[in-house]
Amino acid sequence: MTNKHENEYKMLGLNIAYYRKLAGLSQLQLAEEIGISRTHMSNIEAPNMPTSISLETLMDIAAALSIPVHALLMFRD
Image (cartoon, rainbow, N blue to C red; front, side, top):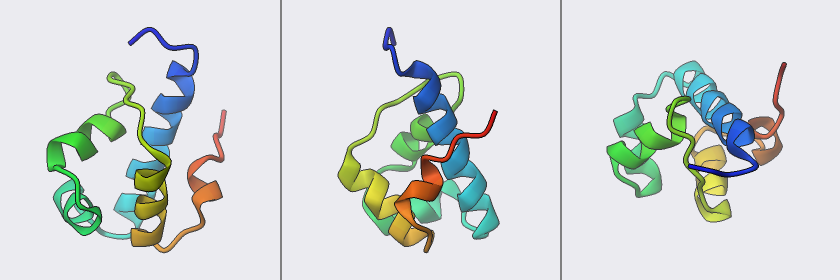
């Protein structure tokens, strides 16, 4: 992917993985809850494979994890 926001996609994926694990969910469980494939969920979280996601999917993930959307967008150094 040649994208000027590649680093942000990586960090978003890492945040999603962090909050998913904190909630005690597997990738499959979260994917099923929001209506995407486990493979797509894996691609979103994979730091070596930055994958863009729609706002709809981002909001669905936040809702499924019972966190505000902005928590997923707070990138730490």
